[in-house]
Every structure is written in C-alpha cells, then in structure tokens.
Image (spheres, rainbow, N blue to C red):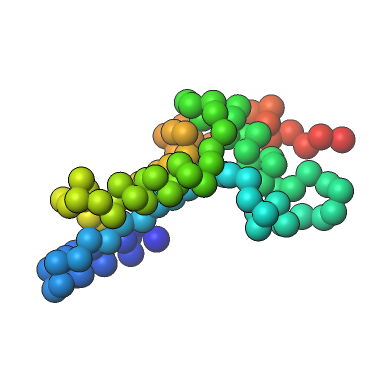
Length: 109
C-alpha cells in the first residue's frame, strides 16, 4: 500500500495536480473490529489494543476522531505540499517494531 501511495502520488500529481496519501491507523475499538472472534472470548482487537497500550510510546487510547482529524489535516490547505505519504496514526507504535516478548502477547487462560 505504501508503494502504491507513492506511485499514485507521482502519477496523479504530475497528470492532474492531485495529492495522494494513506493513513495507517493503529488498533481502535469499533463495532466492526469487535465482531471478529468468537462470542464470549476476547476479540483480536482487544489483544491489539492491549499490545499497543503496552508498547507504543504514547500509552493512550486511540479513537476514530484521532484518525478523522488526521484525514482532515491531509485534506486541508495546511497539507498542500504533502503527497506520497503514509501517515501513521497509532500513538507511535509503528516506530517500535514488534515486541514479541511483550506480556501483552501472552494469551490469557
């Protein structure tokens, strides 16, 4: 997706003057995300949120409004020179890599 974003940014920018960017959102609770998994069990998104909270530089909940505000910025004149970018809205989790030894990765019994 990141490579496609850069390629499209080049092509669409040169041909039509259009900016192309991608938002990569971290784990956030939603009805759709919560529906993944068996009834009565902790869902995948619950594990992902716990992992993010334990390992991201900013240990705070992520909300859809955070993602929406980032999109609003990219759509605004403030970002008129921003194209070909993947904007990570994940409390900095992408910068940390995978912490496979994190206690958040352990299954609860």
